[in-house]
Length: 80
Image (cartoon, rainbow, N blue to C red; front, side):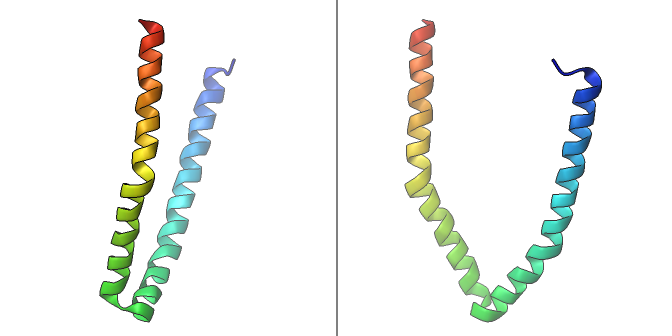
């Protein structure tokens, strides 16, 4: 069983790791996005990203949602 000190140190380490990741992404991603927009056009990149999210929403998310709802229904039946 972790002690209170272990939990606090774990949260501090997690917070530091997330801060470092945030800094890294803010440093790397904007120049990449700018170069992509320069290469293929400003509106084209936005349209491609929107199309990607819509494909994700229509083809990937519903089966995941159905599976999650089925598991919830089964757990309620077992509890009842």
